[in-house]
Every structure is written in structure tokens, then in C-alpha cells.
Image (cartoon, rainbow, N blue to C red; front, side, top):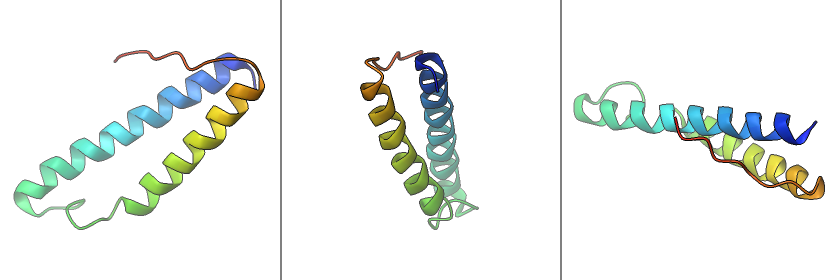
Length: 69
């Protein structure tokens, strides 16, 4: 993967993690889907993937490029 592709993947992961956090926060108020750890496995998988992508980026000599959304 190129440096740009790695940074794009990091952006995608961050967006999904933010969506999970927002969904869980809303669910907590009404004890809805997401309030009882339904996203825990996906969050862990995404965090592990983030570590892998950051390691690849470091090997390529690049650095993360944060893009606020």
C-alpha cells in the first residue's frame, strides 16, 4: 500500500471508531443497541488494524496525516 492509501485507511478507521462511540453514547440514554458492548469486538479489531497500519506507515517512512472531519 502507498503512504496515501495507508493514511486513507487510518481516516476510515477513525471515522468508524467515532461512529461507534457516538452510537454507544446515544444508546446509553435509552439502553438501546450498542449500550451493552455490542461493538466491543469491532472496536478491538479496528484498534489492532490501526496498529498494523501505523507500523506499515512507519516502515514506509511516512507519517499519519490527520484530516479533521
